[in-house]
Length: 116
Image 1 (cartoon, one colour):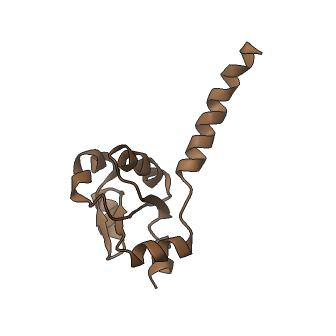
Image 2 (image 1 turned 180 degrees about the horizontal axis):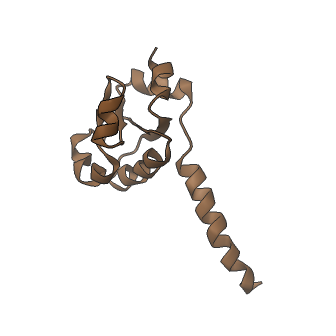
């Protein structure tokens, strides 16, 4: 039985990655935006300048740990990037910093459907 524990590590890692990348539903996002959610695009500055949503602010994922104080921890945070992987990682950064309501939107392009 003890030799099977080694197989749990990759299964747990994959499970965590899938869990952290899950996206908020449309109804959830609309409700959060109605409550004053902050939309944070964690792509690079260059990616953000190329195309982004006008209501989003840009804090690149590699700067989020230091720049988290620019966000209000009492308001919901909606994170997005290009595919959902960086924003999934960013969720864990903000939760570690004490933010309670942090959601991964996945791709920044999804915001259009939520805000129209």
